[in-house]
Length: 301
Image 1 (tube, rainbow, N blue to C red):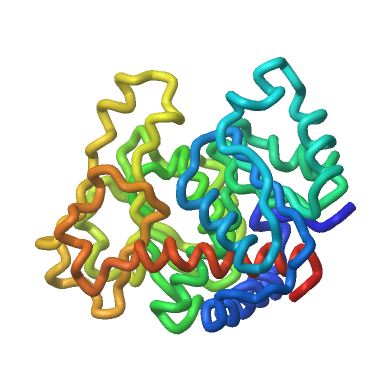
Image 2: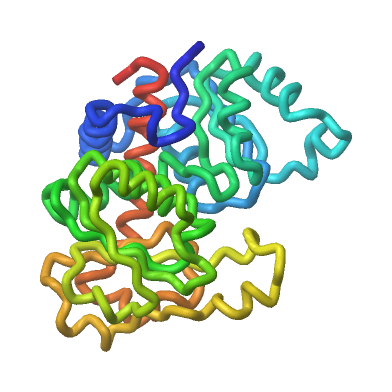
């Protein structure tokens, strides 16, 4: 079975660091025609802007051709075709599949039946490993290291797949976490138990102001309406936090604000022009990291 990237656990610490090194190479030289003749499928069963476009751009910059869909409305899925048959059919045509799906576990299932590598571009509230790798790349780029950092994750820690993946990836590097969320969106207990088992320290708080000034990374997230079954619950928490420029007066000089995007109201636009905002560069980094993931899984790096 070909190697896939479904969970961040599919890559060892050494492989993670290798991906970050390859990404740095690609950042210096954005266009390398090493995948000429290869075809990449980007199949998105759920809306996406940055992830889909950066995977497609990454594939094009490596010289590969891209096929796929960003909307199931024009596919045989509307006729009732099963995920199994869709994946079997697509893997006959391509060298690698990038897939986003609203159901947790869908990407793992796809990797077990596909004849080519599968990259999970997000499955429900579960995992988003390519986002995690670009987050790690951005953290290392801004801090000069990954070890011994205090990372404050803010907002939707219950459904936020980027949060779940990042805390697991950072476990290799002796982090200290702060989890800032309303009670309704606290980090699920299984992740806290997992951290406890690894002896990784963390603090939980409802107040954004509590750990702004002693964190190295503030990782803001939006409250995801699409994950709520009860709209009243969403309305209650959607504007719970708002990071504003006036709140940054006493933060550490090395502190950087990351966000997987899209943002809603959780970061005020007056933060954008401060030296702490890094989320646009973080999004750009996604292209280099996804180039690295594709090249690695296809055996070219």
